[in-house]
Length: 195
Image 1 (cartoon, helix red, strand yellow):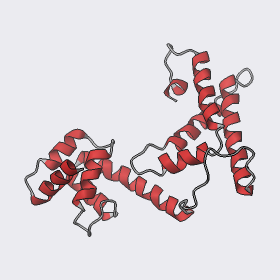
Image 2: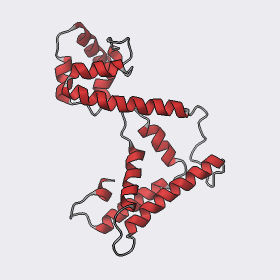
Image 3: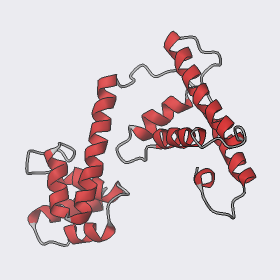
Image 4: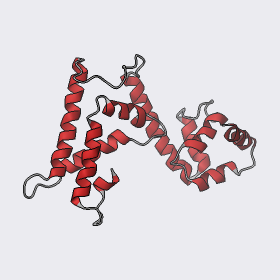
């Protein structure tokens, strides 16, 4: 994706076009866009891959047209149209190609997905706060229920998992937070070691 959106002169138009074609070939796999959304965009510690791809396709399509449409615009438009057609087919329940695997019976509901996305937004805001002031960041995440426990008291295991697995946290801020000599940080350090 970085090759397609790169402004570098070292990457030719043809290279960008080939990279975009490869992405669109993957996009044609039945159910892949939905899987990307469920597994990445709705994963608390994952990037919004589906959203970023759609932004890239939309940006490419909306480039100013000077001398007719460029190939990158047509490829991106094709990807967006394929997504819409795929949604229509899935909504009607008529798959034209068999899926790679059987559909799961325990898919999250719309409300579950909205709650996950809201938690992900709070996680991003709490992370930004954590990187500025670790104590306030943990308090904000605990306040919104992302670190379990009771209000004002986070679950040490969930804090340890966050500190260890979430890539958006500043390592210096993590060090500052766990270096404080408090009973709470000792239990968090114990949880980090045991994970």
